[in-house]
Image (cartoon, rainbow, N blue to C red; front, side, top):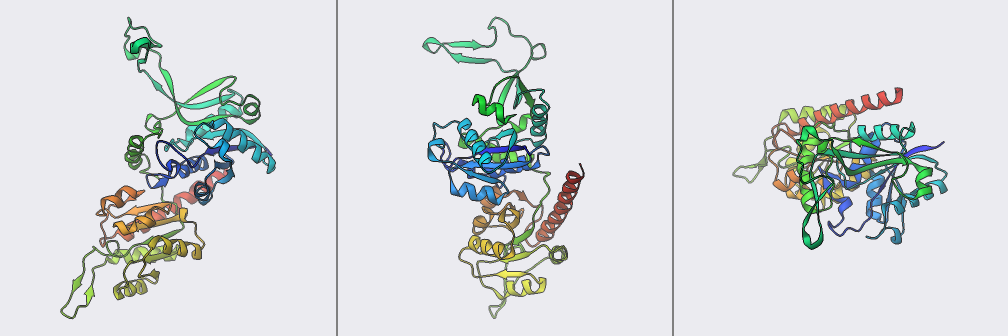
Length: 396
């Protein structure tokens, strides 16, 4: 049976930004954001990442995409996206996968609108258009440099400056997605042919990342655009100091330490255990206080860790949970390694600025004041929302 397949070209090299397709926006690698957008699209049957890079391939598989490896000759700076798409289609055909509709997504567009993508697929599959692409309307007056650097009007009359409401808009490609019938694309070898349709997407989603300034802008926008996304995870890991505690220690005259914790955090952990959500505490130090608290909560704990990220990888593997399905809650720079490998990096409100920048979610609570309970509530409500979405899709 022929499928509607999303192909995401994501090569390892980049002139403007090193390892660009693996850089994180809103706590998620760019290639993973494109995968998620395709997975959320009700019209997409399969998501494929085309890459020449093993690390990108591993991340793509981690986030649930199929992978097509391509050679260096179609992965360099001079190679076209079309060459990667044609190679991917040929490889899928060799695997016995028939592709009817091809959706070409670009990982450098971090905010691909899945609803608009679904509309584009419907427009093409219904044969209303041969090709459909994402665009935003523009009323900008465009210019280019002519002979001697003199400004020359492009597409408008310099003697006429009509008001915005008296003009018809132009449309600017966002680069987010292009949808086409696969056989026709293979025949012509180019993404534009025949009858071409414009799919308008929200202005705020139209950013495309080619420079560090654009990457920084996307990171700022992510907090707003991703704000209402439910936390869909299978396991939870946390730091201890500054997360379960307020990051202060009371030391008595015998050198014994004590910390303050929140009873509501204990209830949050109990709710996670009741829902069969695996949980672990990871701590750099070995401290009897941490052991006692983990025993009280009846959850796993790993201490005296030189490499918390390696410990988290090991725990996730032993638990049978993909890192993309793990939420990690941290507060300080020694948590960055963990935050950079999970699908849901989370920070307490009073976290170090570098941790806040790496987080996909920043909690309203500070460490030791209900942060773990807040994370538990987000996890459980997110699982309910995800189950509801999957139920609706299975019955539609």
